[in-house]
Length: 129
Image 1 (spheres, one colour):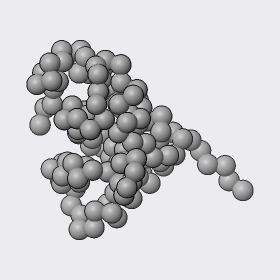
Image 2 (image 1 turned 135 degrees about the horizontal axis):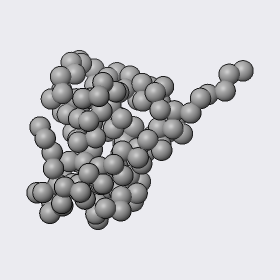
Image 3 (image 1 turned 180 degrees about the vertical axis):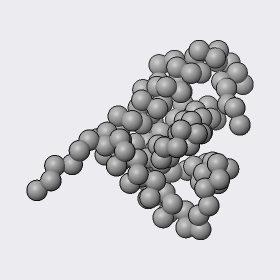
Image 4 (image 1 turned 120 degrees about the horizontal axis):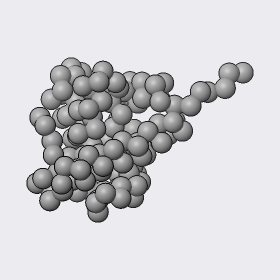
C-alpha cells in the first residue's frame, strides 16, 4: 500500500519530511538502545502538527514500517510503545506485520525479537567486559 499524507492535507514534500522525522526520532532511541513512545516521536516532528494518538501518527508509523520491510531491515517501529500500561506497541504494529507477510503465533515473541534486531542493527556498541 503506497501511503501518502494527502488525506491529512499534507503535500508530498511535507509527508516525506514528516516520515523522515519520525524515522530519525526512532533511530535516535534505537542508537541509545531504549524504547520510545508515541508522544516522544510526535514532539520531534516539525513538518506538521502531530498528535501522538492520531490517525496521522499511525499512518506515518505504518509507512516507516513498510519502508524498513521493503529494504529488508528489522521493524524499526517495534521500539515505539505505549508510555504507560503494557509498554508494548499498539495493535496496529501486529496488524501491519501480518499485512507485510510476517507469520507468527506469539505476538510478544515476534515483537521482542524485532526489538532486539533493531538494537543490534542501530544501537551503539555495548562495551565488553
